[in-house]
Image (cartoon, one colour):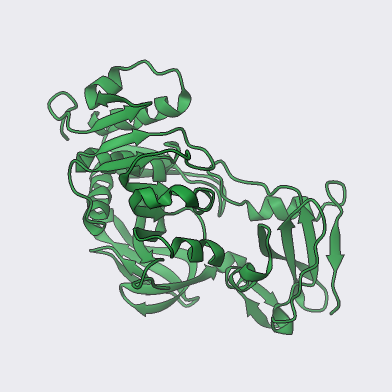
Length: 357
């Protein structure tokens, strides 16, 4: 791997001050988020060929994943080629470097010889920013930054689902907006779907060199040899269009079987998007008659009336709970289980509605 001393082609910009790679590594920053970026850059030029990255914990207990430096380089190069981001371009880092999303932005800048502007990760982008070729954001960050997203040529969204309302807002942008599918084990995404302009699509398309299949549950299986991924069985239920293309349905571990009817919470949430003006999610609780009882949990200080009459009876929530704030993971993702536990706890916040059967 190239050394920092003779390959100073990536610049890091912090508070309008420009650092070469060597200068950036030598600088004594006092803020933890910048120190984490330094650690990531130092790994790239170091002798260790294996990077340990923690998963976010949004779908289970956080765990350590070891990734080969060659895999990280291949992933970075493939993304740059797919999005047609050229050398000497500009990128903005707004994700924390504790997890794979932020680390991969650093690696893309290094292999692509980009100018990487470093901003402290927050919920929303600053209101006054310049023009950039590339940024990666969570859907929540994008939703809170709509007014400034026109400053980017390419926007990569990952780390969560994109609501119908957000997708409609992003469709007004002239730049390329892509929703990614991937995980820590695949060194970020292995598939993308464009979610704006005339070429928007509901299907995820594999990056070059990635193939898909499904198991008996219709859960996605990933084969990506250059990512060192072989027959990786996921818990994502999909509609397989071809071996390079799929429609995401939801998580197998989230599927609700109520009275013999299988309900995907993620699909039901899409249907409810236009009818609820607050953050919300679908979950379930045990039910003696149907096995599982669909519930809706809404982030709101007070109870609000919601009309479910447009839904089939089997898909209508039977209880609605209102919670002032959802529980989030360290990466800002919704923790469904902890939020549900908090919502249904009478001691914490008893507001809820029981609806007619």
